[in-house]
Image (cartoon, rainbow over all chains, first blue to last red; front, top):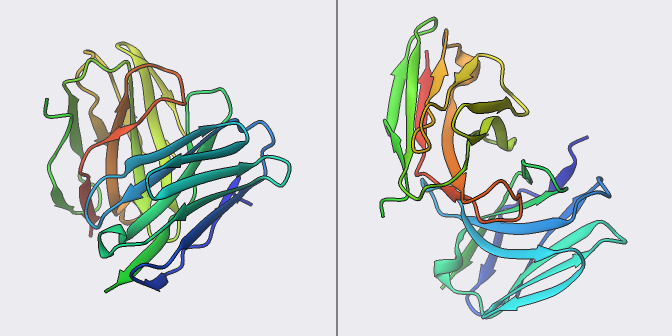
Length: 110
Length: 114
């Protein structure tokens, strides 16, 4: 079993919808949680970073970490066609390497 | 700044051939790494380096070699290409060795091994 599980989708929503993307993990030592966005044929880019538990908001994006349930979420409000991409969760203990989920493919239709 | 530059963008190899994927960054980053991305498998770490002269293995190192003679460059060598190495390869770097820092990715190299 991989340490990080993420539903690959695809997820299709209409423009303006609230999107919820999720990952679960098994390693209780994970402290650093990130979301990367990857457009087709491009490298991933960091979208959100959270340390330990709690919520973090940045514009239309909210990252949530629940360490007791080993569950992290990314919410996108007022989704736009430009949000269509693959979203990768990533997390780590205090080491060097990030553990990535497989990515969820999101399509926002006009 | 160009960021992280990978060459080539596309490559086709025959089984048994060797080649080097190039990666260069102009941000004076300490940490550099190579990932491969396969459908249904996500991003998997091949090798990483925490500074010039220091490299270590990641999750899937077999069949690949790396070296880091300068801060800027981190080439990935395929010794004897196999069809299982068909993948998209990403080089990534970050300022320091702290895992919580932002990783900057290159645009990828799509490799096909026939």
